[in-house]
Image (cartoon, rainbow, N blue to C red):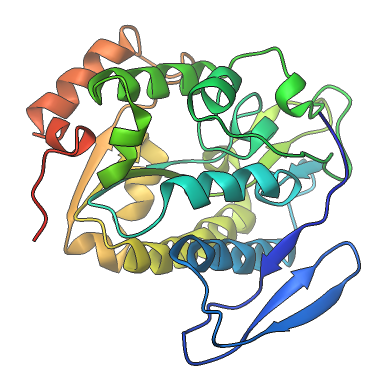
Length: 287
């Protein structure tokens, strides 16, 4: 269902002792919120996302990029429900993907969010609006989308299986996020990933997103960071936070990735060999 909605955004990273701003983006009004109503954990995380969105809007894309989508904005209602449900506090493990997929997070605002998992397993819903300057070959249909994001189907099906068939168990100690919130398309509607961008724009996107990721990592405090794919792994090697933590690389679940047959079996082997199943199953004692 595609409808226009009232979207609220936290525009600062507030502390309990200071007031913070909430923006009604439809009426372009800034509302001052009392310091007695301190933001919840997920709202602090979302505040960093909103700051990142503002910074990314200031960057000038390369000429071949004609359309830029940001599902954190046009699918904010579902995205925030994902955060509210599954990001109530710090996590032990954080999986970080590259950017939204066209039939996954691009449709509903949930990282690797294939429709059936988001709607039927996570039980998330909400209103989703259309992005500005939409390419006719890349329509946003929200939960009316009939395509399943293959990467998301692989990833969430495996995580559910290994977490005693419960994503609620998985999210007790783990969280999934994307490094960059944007999707990029050329004039023909071809998807251009952050790793395929050219020139200084590519570096500007990377540096801007890394700065926010650094702040989000300090908020969530994971002991283990699992980069999904080469681009994120190489980028997170530059993270000061990750230098003092355990940084691992998991093959990307996309069928387009090279040498990626039998991804579920390979990914399960990776998780077992790195002694990670106990985190997915909430079997770690936290003092």
